[in-house]
Length: 310
Ligand code: NVA
View (cartoon, rainbow, N blue to C red):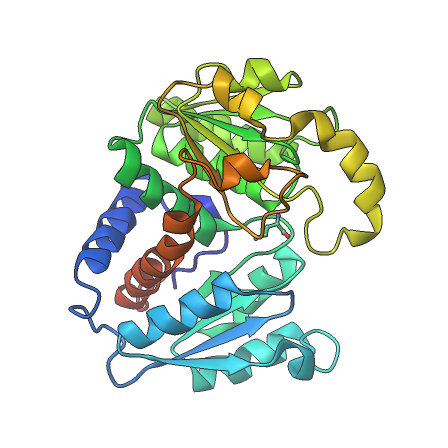
């Protein structure tokens, strides 16, 4: 059974195949109905959501399926019932399961017991659906992904940092992290990304100087400094990350045709200046729309392979 729990659950070739499928689905959104029936897809959110819930619901409907919302608070997975029990119950009701939760280990357990494909809709460790959307958006704006320089600024220790390392490596990107000491992606993720880069020609570099990290980059990316679940660290995080804010000055150091991305929600005046987020270089609304197309593609990809025990 194939799952999408982290970015490197796809090979470089499979990532490209999913992106091609996403582009085709975007061009003709109602043509492919692999979930006709309708097949039910269970979607569960243990953390706040807007884009993810809306884009999965709309995308599953476009695929001919039924998006079943399982209330994360009522289900209280892992508290009221164990993850393996919930997995076996949902796997008997739904053809695929989409889960946003805290620990990656719980998501892995869900995948072990569900008997149906499981998709990571964000954990503390990874946000692989967002990366598919980001790569789709970059292909639209920049063409070939391989060889692009993408600078991720700010809290690189979060799910987005880890996913940029892995998905960027798979796509053959040169990913630069402009992040303070202690806020880089996980060491084992960086080691895995380096292995992938050896095959794809990508690279990963860490730089504590935001200007050096941004210099000449094709793409500047940032994310909130206070990820969901870290709210009690808000004050100290704002102090640590303030030199890494994505300002117009940093944009001026990037390539003249550089684009700016942010997975949203954005905090104007914190990790990104309002003039940058709302300015001519920003492609964040395309990026948000592309969640739907990218997620349709990964759901269809997994559904097609649901019999395969890989
Ligand atoms: N790093 C952020 C991503 C939000 C989509 C968080 O986990 O809150």
